[in-house]
Length: 344
Image (cartoon, rainbow, N blue to C red; front, side, top):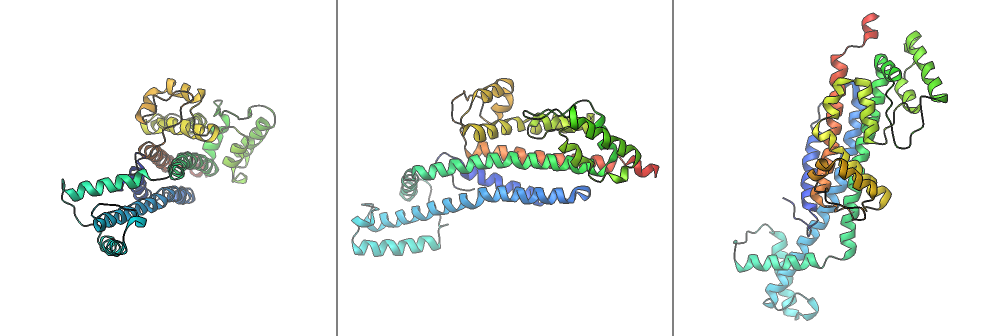
């Protein structure tokens, strides 16, 4: 178990990241979406690496400082840990003790002993001396993980659906014909003007010369028939294309928890990590979801309590929801043969 830095729970975040890394490494094959899966794995590992590497570095640095303080206290009889107040002999003894401890830092300490209390006190002193800049650094790290987690899910859900529409004429036709549009906060109206005309033209080609449309999904996306910049838009797009079966995913507990991740991401990106009125409204409408992440008591104007446990759970929600979505679409493609191939 990783050491925790103060009360920020960075160690817990590292543990979650390592567990998710193993999950991502054992995804299995997605023959119809190999490139999508490979891109997701690379992005997930970049995100998880951004958690593990700096957190491990700081944790190890603290351990080194603790061992140094231990050695100084032993050399001076607990008189001081300040090198400026130590005699040359004490400094030499402390250096030797430090070398011994660093070479065997796993040495067991008897629980309840003076040594255990001593080490705990030294460690607490080291943690308390962390600068404000270091604490802000942890806060920036946690905020970037929250934003990165949403970005991974948003990119995966977009690329996956576009690829499915590119591959399957029947899905592309269903997407064009469906009158329920994936609404986003800032999207243009695809059912009017040029967007509507373009989709009509693509629909005609899919009927008459389907082989001429190799990127129907890309064209449909660019027409803004669907938008993928919000959870609402993503859910609407998948339910539109895959209808009832998609609801097994979009209405699942883990997928619904993406609401909290989206809310945190928006507050970080648009409000500098301060809850605004819209965040408070989200909590009011989805209190049960936010309560699962210990975010339900936040009021407008409060800073988001970005700690390792909360951010770790948000990252896990994004990665596991992405994996569930890939598995669902791959299974749907396999279990629903392409009608155009059967009619050939």
